[in-house]
Amino acid sequence: MAIYRLTLFGDLYGATVLNVFFFRKADGSASDMSLLCTRFRDNFLNDWRGLVINNCHWSKVKVDHLDSFTPFPSVELTFSLAGGGGFTNEMTPIKCFVIRTFTDFGGRRGRGRKYWPGATDNGLAAGLFQAIVINNWTTALGNTLTKWGGATPTQAFNWGLVSRDDLFTFRAITHANLRPSLGVQRRRNIGVGD
Image (cartoon, rainbow, N blue to C red; front, side, top):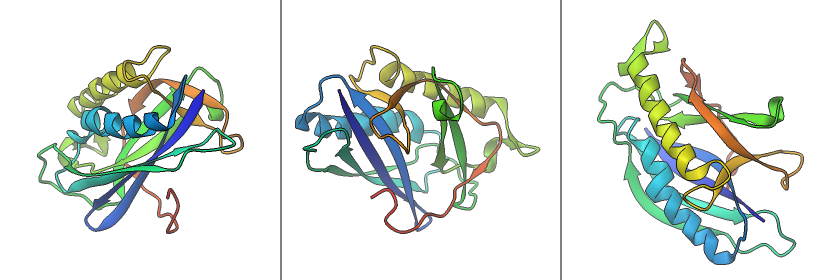
């Protein structure tokens, strides 16, 4: 069993944006790290980037092998992808979508969230996302979980959560949804996520 940490690098209006994801594969190898980079870019990222403003850009993924006494060296893949939502109404770079994730494990260690950049005010009414925005995210997250969730993901990697206290405890994500209100991305110290 191999657990990988994938860090996605991007920018929005000159601000650096990092998102960290965890994946598991039953029979991990060094070549799987490159495969995860490519599949994440071509599948996972493409499912979500069409829902954000065009000013949001992603430039690199970095994969680290976590659960080995002799870890493989990090693997990076550089590329250039922009948000594909076609939206022109822009918001500040700190406002974002909040993706709530859930596992079969109860309590706060069985759930998490992703702050996804590039939210637009086109889909807001009275501070909440309109039904079309929620439906679009529901479809995208359903596609993501089909490819990356459950016992037999089509991409061969499980998307999941890892405890801060124990990097070897992996919990596969079984459900995800969009929080109906905007989130605010917190500022992190330089180097966090690298």
